[in-house]
Image 1 (cartoon, rainbow, N blue to C red):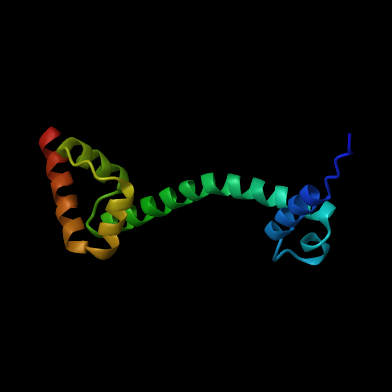
Image 2 (image 1 turned 135 degrees about the vertical axis):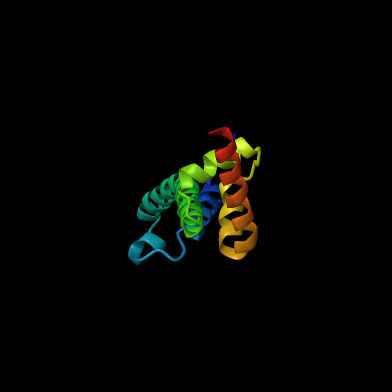
Length: 121
């Protein structure tokens, strides 16, 4: 039985990993052993930061909503409580977009939230 030579497979695997390492500095882009470590580390960062991006954007949306609400004399927490009581179910992404791009529409929401809070109190 003939022996199996795996040069083609190994070369393809190395080529695939070095392609992922393109753009790295120093030997990390062309030395296979170092490239393995750097690519794996980069993939760990990418996985972690996909989660962190969601956290960061939510914080940004909350800051924008709070700033928009304070312009109209209300805090973020009072606005969100009022919207819940008024039965308005808009997520933070949409609310922040309204606060930035459509101030009149956002003002109407703030007024509805204020009315719902006054009615329940």
